[in-house]
Length: 200
Image (cartoon, rainbow, N blue to C red; front, side, top):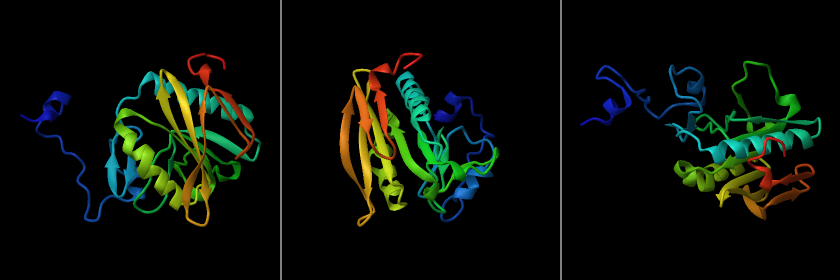
């Protein structure tokens, strides 16, 4: 029995069929009816599962805190894709990007050189991508800072990485429980225990 019927898809529904060689980064802007937050990894479409409350609240906490702390030279946005190359267009949960990289209200992605910090909040269905695949690709694209956020007893734990330019790979610079305090890419001090509060 087809699982498609369980999701309300009849026999006439057609899934997008990838072209030879896979989809391209530009296809994400042209393919009709893609679910929100579809990513492109190595030419394959990756569909997102519904997010948890922890995921949503952690993104809100980090986005609001970073917006309050960021200098004018950078800005913060959530769930915006990065066109790493022709076959990869992942969508970090939060991006810190150079302010001059904003190209207008119809912009659908940033370039790696626009990005100062990429943040992934790990979900059950994205563990391998968030822990291995995406950090490797961000590093190879020379994005200077990466944070991976994991849940522990309902609170975020932030793993902080910095690019080692000689190897185009990330090196860990800290693991932060309860309070995240770093000096790069700009001075940041965030109370991680405030994740469920309306005002941190």
